Image (cartoon, rainbow, N blue to C red):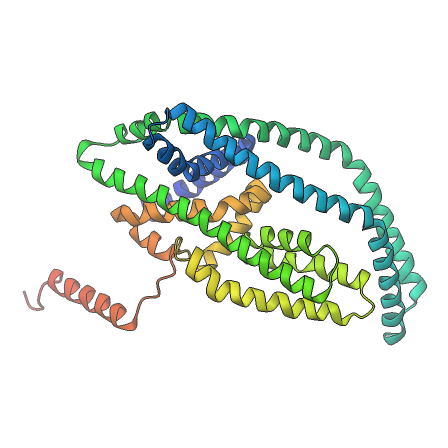
Length: 372
């Protein structure tokens, strides 16, 4: 029995809603597992390289994870030292910013004929409410932090076990399909691994280049905490289309609080705009976008949806997961139109006319001649 279109649409919507609900409820399990899968796929070539050197696979996995731990620990120690420096000066920066804000309120109120005392009273009330809200949220923050510590402790265990049992997992995926589908399954699995590896490596290269450019620009302008701000900006820039907008706010705040002239904030805005142009027109197309061809519309949609579903981790995971979905759609005939929709390949007018012409010919063959 063939279901009508509305019935199919209803079943599809209910299925999608049920899937999203399950993913949201189980986010504390699903999110670290997806991160672990991505990390294991990225580390797999290193493990294979050591295994080809006649090193036992278990020892190769342990050596690889130790190297990654040393790199992360070194970067984390440097990052924490920079954050502690900023933390020591943060009260002074807040006090200066508050003074600048009060001066701005006075100027704006005089220009628009408003009462500055009322504006400052409203600002003080808002700050008090924010402090009270923050105090009430400390308990929730501690619980959330405890959950993330547990997740971070489980992440290396997941990665280790995924690398160890990788042959079993791959064989299990192949056994789910018929013998005549094995070649297609192997192609999808191989390309999925390749896409994730190249995409993550591309993101790492992009982050390093953007961090170097931002640090250089901030050092030339004499902005305090240039290294920390540049690294934070590069990490935020990994979030497509949104992170770059957020990343420019911190250096502007520091410049307004530490520099005598507000023109430094304008210079930072110009420098970051130039860096974004370089990133969007050269770094991303040459390094990142060549690995994962997803159009900007769906990139923004999935980043916002990932944030709504899983928070900040969902924003980082959204593009790799969408790339995997596109890859699967590209290899399954009924889903190929969806893969084309997610991509960024613009059809030429000639190809569109050819498709329409072919469709008209097919319809003409199917319809009987008039008079018969």
